[in-house]
Length: 256
Image (cartoon, rainbow, N blue to C red; front, side, top):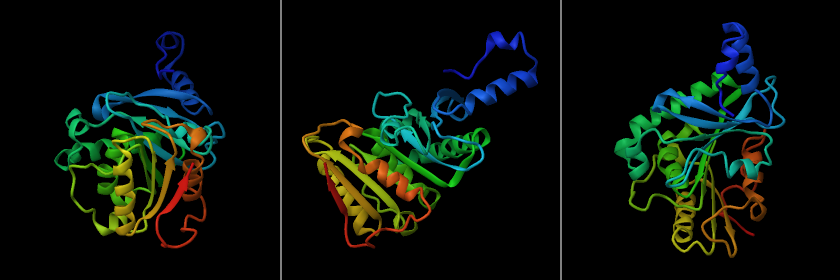
């Protein structure tokens, strides 16, 4: 559903048309395609079915896989469409998307900031509960951009991926210490599963609060029916008591 009403513009005044647009953008259970001027592209935004503007809502920013397009999957699956505003983003620049390198982060960070500001202007967003995640390339991107943004994020969700294997940089302690990090990958994903295990171990070593979920017999894909842990993790760290359940006693491994 696009945020454009060319026919209505001929029939309604500017104020009435804006009321129509605002109503459509806030419709619970609706996914919209919205232009993002910060990168001359667009994002898709899913408004949860239980949304109300009377409360501030956690936000998930989702990055897509290689050669993909903006999507709210897999987080819409994992949350059953409730509890979270989900924005599927296009990368800020093609240069960053093609290499995920730190020297291209300035524009990517500016795009992140512009998108969050845009969403805050449209919906009741809690900027203290902004999560970042993605599948495959989106997961790798989350490790680069998410580590750089550090304390501005409530948690990182790395799916079907690990840390960028060409990146040996250790994040700043303030960026990762006690940071909730979810790593999920199929055991039959021969390329990315070893990197996912390595990422989980590294993040735990650096002091993050890590949850690792391994999907037995699953290749390079995500299926919410095989993963109840991601939804549980999101609800936990978006809730009122986000402290680790068992302290820092190691990576919590969940096998499905």
